[in-house]
Image 1 (cartoon, rainbow, N blue to C red):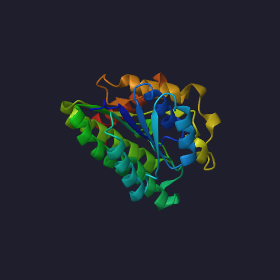
Image 2: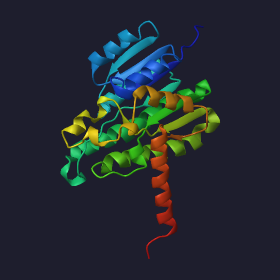
Image 3: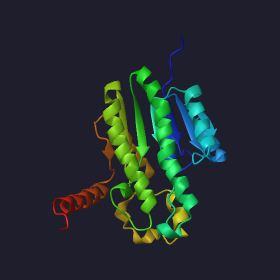
Image 4: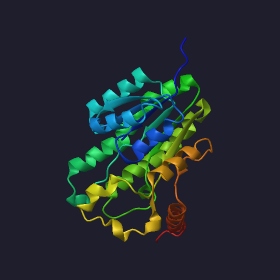
Length: 255
């Protein structure tokens, strides 16, 4: 019987953190299943990694049932996977009542429903393998509420809770679950938000991180028992301050 190849599935693999996860996981795996809407970019990534590992490009829009179904089928046919990285995401910036509801629903489907479905598809296979790693890319916004990102932050808070509870359920099967909560990253993620009023220059330079450092922090945290991972010292300090303030409000409720 041929030796099984270590495999990773990464969503949102055409840019930003997704590309970087593929690059760094290529050092750990023989096969990468790269999922994204932009097939041309996936082909560029496959060419880049051609001398390092086998890359399967899956063109799929995970805001749709068809796209999720195609990805689940790829997981079953090309897997089982040792790593599942639910990274695909976007963030429409704007007041909740002024933002088109279909955009908010698409984001909810992508961040929450697609993540749940892919986890549900991967976990039984991971149990058979005796273990695996699931990384759900959340956000510092899950811990630090922000005006103009009400639904975005709520979907990421869901990922944190889901990841923590899921870890408790699958730990005995050797599976580890992580909710990665990065802050500002130097990628194209914020490009669409600029048109809605986001100003990069107003964010202190020290608050920005490069995708390489974020992914390295994520993968380095695997095996440590940490579920919620906040990369960057400044981001960690901000998250702790906000959580401490929330705890104080809980301990001193308004009468």
